[in-house]
Length: 272
Image (cartoon, rainbow, N blue to C red; front, side):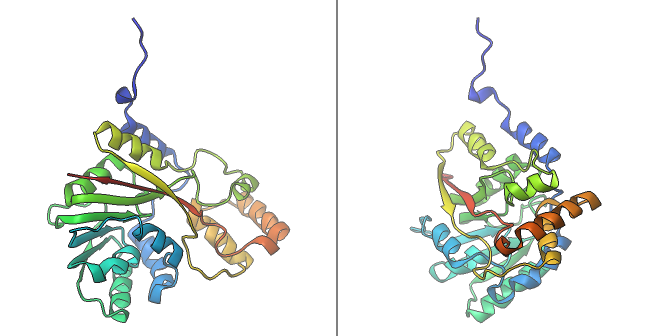
């Protein structure tokens, strides 16, 4: 008798948790995002127009009136869709990010929204059920099984997510230069397999768009080091020395958009 297993015998939830525990960067805290919030005021630092269009154009909002934007940041997706909906709920664990949502909503005369200060790990019992749930680049969590369960519990019609395609957020040559080309982060494939096991018919597409500010500015050395550390965590002295050497060798090719990846997996499924 064969001992071969099928895909239904693989515990993708446990594999994800193990992978996340070994990832080279600790999860960002609300304080981390509070410090980053000033970059998103008036839309600065939020997703570029092409990313927003690529995301929203793939959504089916037929007969949908409410939307929950989880890990909303500066309200990139939720505010872009607010005019066609009765109510948008912007959920984030960074108080200052929610302040940015309010500022941007006021600038656009948007009033049909509500901010919710919560994290993926908080109790969601009082979070309202909505027709649509969105998680745009916000699912780098310790437990993807729990995160997906929360989205499914709050989405009456469908869920739309973008998740990482590559195991790192910055170019491979930078990681190799500093000796950090290792396991990296868990990607969208875990969520795809988990949802498949649970019986959801998941569709996937790929957004090959720039996800940060549309402005492309040359980074100076301190800003470049800061951008890399934001992506992968604190560097030791030797790694910083290697990064400085890389910067000096490649300075003319280093731009503000470079450290961030440009490919995202866009996955979506109906919940009912």
